[in-house]
Amino acid sequence: MTSDHWRTIKALPQVSLNQLFEEDADRLKYLGLEQSGIYFDLSKTHLNRQAIQAFQELAGDVGLSGKMNALLSGEPVNISEGRAAEHCAERGTGDSASVDNARALHRRMKSLIEIIDSGALGEFTQIIHLGIGGSALGPKMLHQALKLGDEKYELAVVSNIDGTALEPVLERFTAEKTLLVIASKTFTTAETLLNAQSVLDWMREQGVVDPLGQVVALTADPEQAVQWGVDETRILPFSETVGGRYSLWSSIGFSVALALGHDVFADLLAGAAAMDEHFQAAGWDQNIPVLAAFADQYYAQVRGCETRAVFAYDERLGLLADYLQQLEMESNGKSVTIDGEPLSLNSSPIVWGGVGTDAQHAVFQLLHQGSHLVPVEFLAVIEPGDSLNPAHHNGLLLNCFAQGAALMAGKKSDDSHRNYQGDRPSVTILLEELEARSLGALLAFYEHRTFVNAVLLNINPFDQFGVELGKQMANKLAAEDGNRLDASTEELKRRAFGA
Image (cartoon, rainbow, N blue to C red):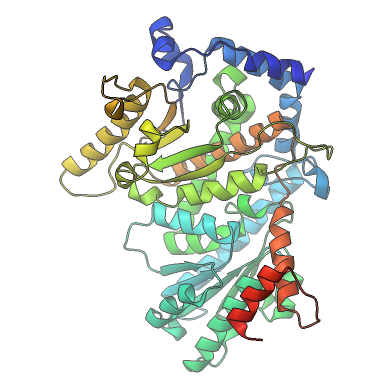
């Protein structure tokens, strides 16, 4: 039956965006939606009432409602690993025991923040947060988006095993003033622990007598952290049912909560909870994550779009595209269904992007006149984040709005080099203000949108086995057991390390 719905969707009339606006004066009423201080304008997509109805029928056939309820109630939706995905419990939605546990762990985190703020553990003014993947991308993105510049602590988030990422931080930080935060779900992540050991060595070299006394661990395996040497009173656990790319709501958010204040973290959770409530309660034709996923699937399956571009017209959101790359591509970059059968549909688009207006002078040539059809997502903030001449922010917003209009309208010319085809889709997400509540709601929107896409594709968005293979091969290369890989890889190893 599902394939019948896809055939119906693929057979929908392909009407231009300009024509859709001409024929439907009410487009903004059902495709311009507001939630938690954010306006989501989906009117410049090719969705119309007919397409939305067709997708709703598909959603009913694949059991979207039941799967949404399963996610939000803490049922084991991560089929391949046999466990729940309980990031929503961190925000107050889910199994009551899991919600209570999350709240208890948040209180523990708040208590440790108060102790550190009091100076009881040392006069810290700097924080090095070590992690990788979701254990670093989320905190780094949040800090860049929400910092004001007058915080009590200077925070550096380091993820790369490349020493050129860590060394500059050590050169400008003071060892006895530095709190080391190690974020690893299993507390076995090789890159993170190597970086941590280098920081401890640096502390010793700088005269710190007890470096481990300046360490806080964020992990779902406290026993492993204790074995590594962290004092159990300075370990902040989180549930193993919280996946890495969904973990910023848990203890993984500790460094940001410490650097920016626990109230900021609490507001972030509240904003996400508001989006959770909307996702749970709104009908599909008014449900923002659901409608956005319908548009995603339209472009992936009907128009064959392989990528989606995200451009934040706000420097503070400069890491959002990076964050979404992991969220969406690690979640939905799959080639088999939940049942292990080959996926017959296109999986997650390749997410890429940048910051406006810089991107206008780089990649927008392809977006306007290239042969690829690329759905574009614009993000902008009404309230400026600076105190300069308003012309700066006004120009930023006008450029953002103009790009969406130009992609849709195009411009005909007898000179083929100056002809703009138009009919190129975009979504604009407009925040009233960039603060913790609105950012929390925005990130929860992206999480739920990713989940709906997975349900429509019949895949599991909560495992990431593809991440493991490269690590296994790296370990094999490092082993001195005579095992050899392909000739090309062995030659690269020989050139780098010698015979």
